[in-house]
Image 1 (cartoon, rainbow, N blue to C red):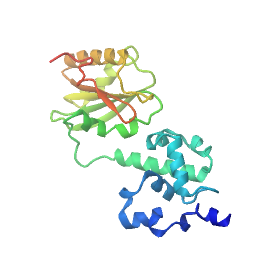
Image 2 (cartoon, rainbow, N blue to C red; image 1 turned 90 degrees about the vertical axis):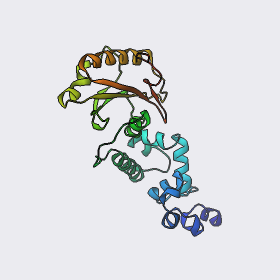
Image 3 (cartoon, rainbow, N blue to C red; image 1 turned 30 degrees about the vertical axis):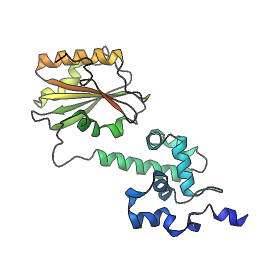
Image 4 (cartoon, helix red, strand yellow; image 1 turned 60 degrees about the horizontal axis):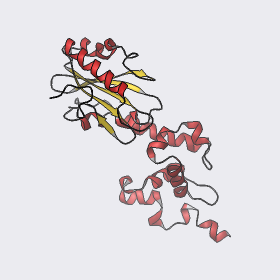
Length: 235
């Protein structure tokens, strides 16, 4: 029995199979998600080493995106994950999120929908409620700021057009890009999304501030409504 239990201890693995040793030798980028989690967890539970525990967490939450969405209390309830381990996981995820949103020394230039999505998808895809964000750009399509305006059910009747364009008017911006997420994970635009886009595009023309795009963020996917010509005039 003792021999069997030894198989579940990280220190009894061959040195070239231990996550920490592998990280030191070949770099963090070469490790699997389960191995990186194992380094955070440090130890597993009876019958399950830290790598196996990490893999079970990933399986239970459908990968890193689901683990990001899980709150602290939910993680604490997982078998083998107490308060300390849950805190370590949430802290590591939050550090990753903050790294993605660090202010850059030079303003990012948006040349495609993917460029815009890269700046917001990591955080928006994990939000539990619908959010509407507005990216404000200058005449060279450089990002000036990103405003987080609305949270909750979004439609053309609840979103105030003046709020969308207020910051852009104040700093004399040239254009905006709208983003909102679908917590369901499905990035397909709804009829309400299309109506809201149509209203925003019309208002932007009157204000001489172009709505470059309205992008719907899902789980690991997005839809550019400009590319799909949903809510935007043809041409």
